[in-house]
Length: 187
Image 1 (cartoon, rainbow, N blue to C red):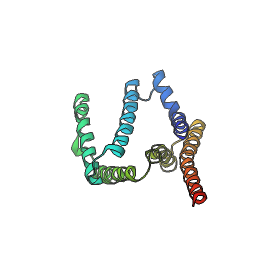
Image 2 (image 1 turned 180 degrees about the vertical axis):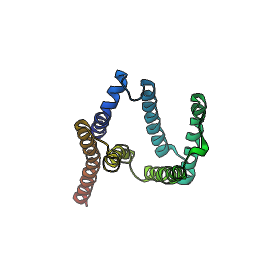
Image 3 (image 1 turned 30 degrees about the vertical axis):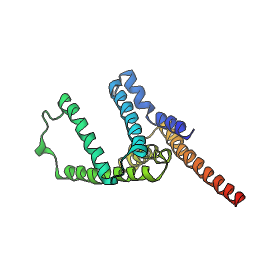
Image 4 (image 1 turned 30 degrees about the horizontal axis):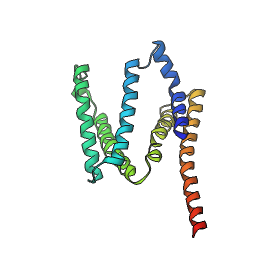
């Protein structure tokens, strides 16, 4: 139930952008939205595979292989779309390069390795709540740091997302408490 509520919250959070895209008045195209949905499904499938079928190797090694495979998988699309055409390498500031390195090391290597490790020690449903928390954090950062505006439907979506994460974690908490109570009764 918590996952369904969270999905509803995410849909509310991005409903204005999706509506604009569907009406052709801005936003991303239908094909891009389809790719994002496909990527989300692939991420979920990979997470479940990693949890239940992964090798017993080091978390860092497994994470590295997964990130390298993802990087290689994106190369054909980059060349097909011609994304390097007209790119001016010397026009990239040192601050931008430092930002990229920060994202590579902390956003990807550290963050993804922590995610893979967490999948090994916690239930997949509980670990997946990060996907609902990240948009909430991003919106709050955009509002408070970049002075972005937020609509009432987006606020309601954020509240719904937070509620879904609470639902997911409360269900686990209740199961653990019931198991403890049964052990006390039996013992």
